[in-house]
Image (tube, rainbow, N blue to C red; front, side, top):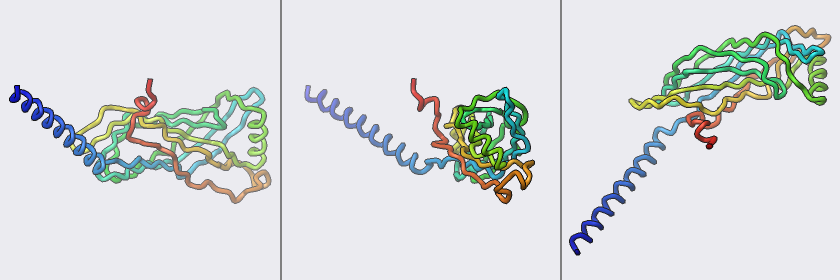
Length: 213
């Protein structure tokens, strides 16, 4: 009986020790390899057409240049699917599928030019319509945005993750001048687009898992 009790205590201590070292090892490993989010920037944006007709149809020609920077020393990112989505005042109006690519350590990848061109019906509220007309008068549109919906895999050493969806990369509040606007129409004629940093959240987490059931 005493022997069995000592065996039980020994087994308990062994299990506890294994769990303790596993947690400690996992914590140290995460601290060592804890990845920094990929950094996205809109480096340039141009509009050569942006006109909403009386039937709420937006005709657009919107172009952006983008950089994606992987700042990590030890992680390779495999972009298996990447879709750029253009927005104006809470209305998505253009989609472009980009070519899949791989991104090595401490690498900057240039994406673009990404061209959104076409027409789409959008719905604006009364205040948004007033804002649109004022922006048209000035020749500068203040509420454009580009999001990136990506599906990736990541590799650290010999370990390669499965495919997952990081949080949506959001490039919001873009102020873009209309290239065809004349100086007489555009009161801020000297205005030019300024580079904009995007929000990529915790890039190496799966937004579908974090969303829960």
